[in-house]
Image (cartoon, rainbow, N blue to C red; front, top):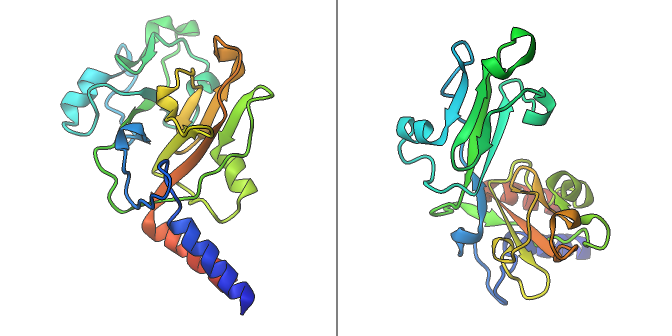
Length: 231
């Protein structure tokens, strides 16, 4: 009986963990401007012509209202799932402002570019039906940096984080300053990857210490909580 009560209490904490402001118990994103989220993947072009042109302006025109005007980041991958680095091709443009361009003429041995898809990181306007996990802080910046990756957190805290988070929020451990306001150069800040700040990328030589939490469909966290009580 005591074990069941303890698990039930833990489940309640999982679904109603405090946010950056002390004492707050938000369900939705209270400060969406500080939350990192991604658009769906887009693939508007094929490399059969001059190359694969996935520009921000063209994608916005073809997908009205689905991509923000000023993205925070861009991610590109081949349709087979390879990252740009893994594909190893010569890329003309890969930035959040212009978008992504791979030209066939830049490739060796008369090879065509792979077919790529892209997505952009935008601050969500609203986060309806989103519930937050607890805050997690598995690493310190005393080594190579602060590595709060999703895969490592899921291994360290099994059953507490949904398989495919929608959003991520990162703040400093001291003062709870949003990561995007600290001035640190962030390697990646993604709900599907997690958060990494490397010391080598900072002018000061060290990242600040961060903690992260993930926004999941409330139904997925409810199921996790239910499983905790059952077990």
